[in-house]
Image 1 (cartoon, each protein chain N blue to C red):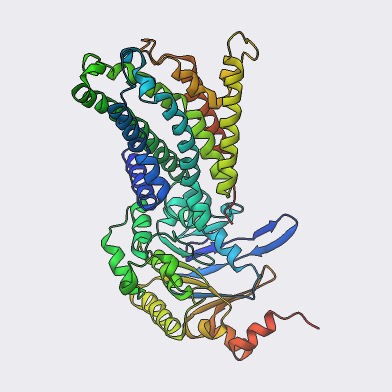
Image 2: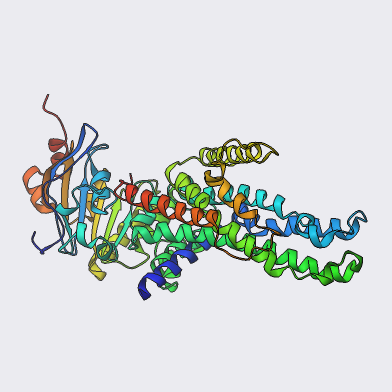
Length: 240
Length: 263
């Protein structure tokens, strides 16, 4: 596989029993981009992300991140990846700070990063409240904080705008843009909110029924179909 | 090697941070205080305790009863260590961290084991402290003439080592099953069946089932039999069974489950 891409997959397929979820996925995510991974619910976005993170063990030899095989270098790769998976989950009996402390301790991240990260996601004021008292939006922010904790060069975020209020969505957009433009991070972000992806993504892939229907720069896509919405509808609608 | 030790240290510290605000953690740590404290107060205040203390001192201090409590605490505590991840659905968070899966598995197990070791050794120390205090407070009982530290220490360590299989078994059960109720129920079934088997085969004149001691939950009970016999050696069949059983269960389960998808 080529080393020009931060994430590269080659013919990755996956089935739950007899149900085929992913079919020959070939992703190529360039460095320092915001890569929007679009698709309707059940298209295979979360499964793809779980495969990229090694939570699903199949086809790890067909996935390369930072030019290294996920099968052979999983730990070294994960050292450079921050992830927000599905609906974020935490130790509910602990506060946001304590949750971050647990993970920072486990990974050996300097604890001064905890304050920085809490501030970055706007949870510094509520960081000592138990997570079980948090709203969905606050939990989403904490999930993002976990992904950012070790300041990794690659972020893999599954539906990060879920549950955020309009202010939260605007903050998230600004944060992701800053991380990409000023810190050169590569951000792989899955979503089904077209408007948000259109505003932040530099590159886009559209997945439908486990297959990649389009992959390329946002300009290429909108050049082909006029707008992201039209392109998305065209690629994710069964012909009648 | 240095890196592995550091990772294990991080794992243990992280487990402590997760559990230190839970009730079961503190109940496990402090249960010896309750049992030893109540026993001490009873012996100090009840005039019925007298005479044959030197021979019966461990009975006086409810050592046998405490070891039953210890097994029940073990079932509850070890189930809780993995249940915390099941309940919060946090396995996926842990497994996307740059930490080898075996470190995560082993640091949880080690943490569970160390807390249990602390529990049983705290009970031992509290009994020794009670002995010293009773020598002063009720000299007529004769505790000041005894020296039980070794006599009690070795069976206590034997009990812990022989319990290793049950600790491993409970760890594997609670790792596999998401429900706390299922884990605890399976643990209680093991405990009750072992106890029933032990009672049946230890009745006077009954020489029935000779393999009761091979029930994993009976390894520790068998190790306890050396209490008060003056046998100060760790070299005992049930201790070996306890350690060997734990190694077989843990290694087997780890290799069987490590390819499992986390979805």
